[in-house]
Image 1 (tube, helix red, strand yellow):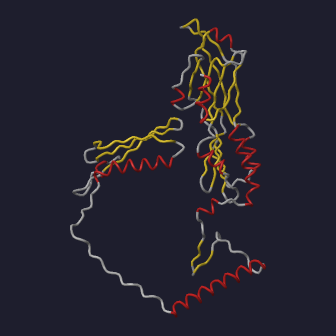
Image 2 (cartoon, one colour):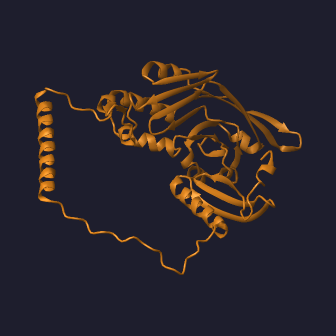
Image 3 (cartoon, rainbow, N blue to C red):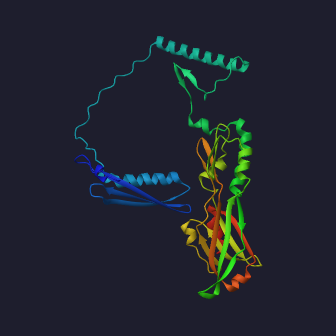
Length: 357
């Protein structure tokens, strides 16, 4: 886009178009807009929008493809049908095989069956080993290695022990990886409103100190990358099987959690709710019963990704100090007796807050 003159070079009778796409995400919903630009005049000639489900990317992808086709269809050349029928070459009838040809086919089939039978008998007696279809082999002077997708998807029995250990570690990483330090809230009189306090709550987020050490000791990882405070562990399918429940949990983002802070009274009733989330839908919530304050200061220090052949676990060994500030009436401030912080799964956050607010 730095040199637009190159885009204007087109043959006579043709058109150049630029397709621009933009998406926005709100929890599990996606909003995608596609814009069609005529490069010759840089004018918009088409605009389409769709909404999809974040957990159903294949359906959204199909809708986007259909939307782009709809935008471009009016500008595609239409085939001209001739009024004259096309000339075709006639096909001769197939000559039936002779008795000699049939005999040769039967003989070849018998030879192949006998050869396969001898092979199976040798394998059963231990004379020869069973051929591994996924090992490299020589075929007519060419060495072939079968790496079809099914060989990656099939679980290997020899990997069950490593897989059991990996699942236990991943469950701990997904459920409770953080070490939190909560400081006592500071109450300062608001100079502009004598009936309210300016409350400051300091929270320190970091991964548990023993987390990376346990990963290094307990798991035979396939690869390791360290870049400053970032440590990335790689796990390949040659040593591990990837259970479907773990794979889907990572792919659907169900491992992501959001910190929710509650300031409660002596009866354990929430007076103030602080939510640290980047989602706009969460920031738009409000309540008439309690004080609700959204923030966007916390960033996950652990992340997971999985593909057909490998899985990655990224750990950021840093501390995130956050200062949450909000206004609170004097009467409510005197009633606060407890501060709690809990990580709520991202896909359950809206339902969790709806019950409280």
